[in-house]
Length: 439
Image 1 (cartoon, rainbow, N blue to C red):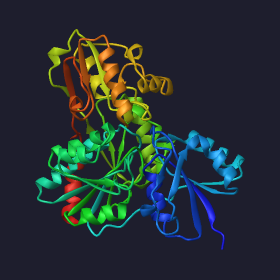
Image 2 (image 1 turned 135 degrees about the vertical axis):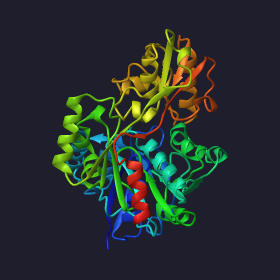
Image 3 (image 1 turned 120 degrees about the vertical axis):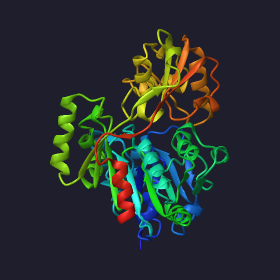
Image 4 (image 1 turned 90 degrees about the vertical axis):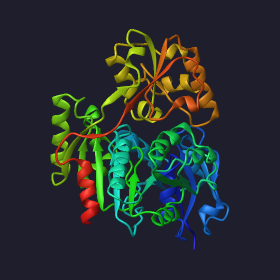
């Protein structure tokens, strides 16, 4: 019997999970390729045979999304599954038209078919865009549950940008683990704050064994989602974070609307930063798409380690990379903290080097900050060179990690920090703890 060819369109994470849960054991399909986008240097690899299973003994090639038409010419009539996140609905529609014009069929991934079932209570923290404040909320929930005596295992959304075989199952309990697994800056930004707080984090490629390993040392599973993706583990309590600074994106980006509609609890975060019009739009969309959800409010107060060091000074701001680039924000905690402290934030674009220069071309909304890109050694070098070239007095770092551990910065550095706080009663943290206590 001939097998139907399948192409999984992705970005090095969700796409592999869709394969593992929906296609690896199904002999009626042959996944002929993954395609890669959003993240640099993740194409031209191969999903290894040890992960691909017996129906794909040679593994599966990972090709650039730009090659999609060529792949469909090689495999006429292939079924194309869209399996990544934080993209506009228009972008998804455009890709669907490309597939159909090339003679293929197109579908979105099935979120329910890809959710694993845990034997433990599972709380999922998702969002409607990158940069909503999802990870600070996950850290705050983990801390509250630990204070109540529960052992929490955090499962982080995948970021397998290196050797996939070695990254199949990853456990992070110390800072040495981050170095051992050769984490990128983007990975460190997600794992280090949990680890520094004494929290064990699991991630990788193959989430069935990842989940089982986490269950062996925990009482509660906490899914810390990535971008605006849906959870890989079926949640008993589904929490979705909304961003009033990008009101409307909850229905205009994929798969934001799934997270909006299916949540048990909706968190309107950054409540003190938004104007009334944006908040009204957000609440209108909540009422239209999930009127039964419990709605709470939160804030992310930003502080500077040394405000006096930046007041009246020329400052270069470095922000979290994904939030500032494909997250569409263009600024973050560092920029807010620096401007509020009276700094003169310089235009970083004239000093951009290598991949950073290309980032400003690819993301024209970026004007005031340097995205902390670090998906590989070359990008880290370009980031370091950009900071070194900048004509400034001080560097304000708004990433959630100590960037000086990874990038050499000769100039004075001031860190901007932010943690989640409840802004309504009862707050999210109390709701999460009560849910675990009562089941």
